[in-house]
Length: 178
Image 1 (cartoon, rainbow, N blue to C red):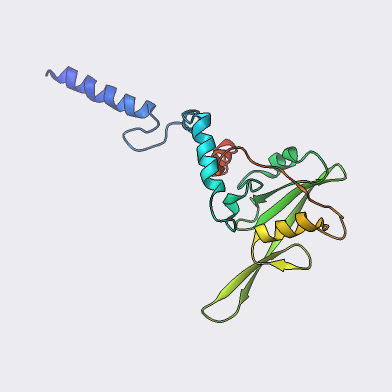
Image 2 (tube, rainbow, N blue to C red):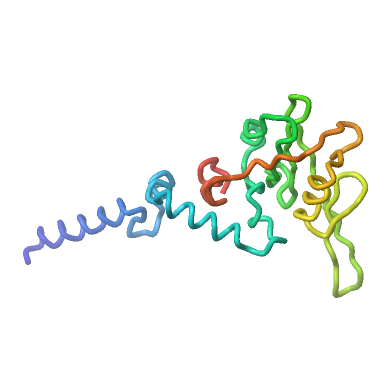
């Protein structure tokens, strides 16, 4: 094979790899193309797999939206009682409950406390004001089920979860928070 042909063959192979999301250096070509490559059926299946995780895992709850921006969460809650839980982008490792109450989007930091029971064992608890819970799903179940106000000052009550319709990775890529 002549030198020109082998060089052309190598170049066309590299371009082919590049347009299939990865270059020969292993760099992702396009987040948008990666998302577009997923069929609605595939996205639905991935979401269903997330929702089948243990009920104490936040990802198994459709009301958990992961790393979405504050403004996006405000647009999602539209009626009084609507709510979702998201990661705090300004305070990594913490969570925020966003809800609509009295025609106003409100954000409540979910307070996280680490209880050190011994040198080898510690436990994390979550709360808004008074009562604490061993998990965020437990906290949400209590406030939704009992229609208790999130805070005494706001009087905000949550009862209508805003459920995500795509897997968490898709939201993170869509909003550039991954």
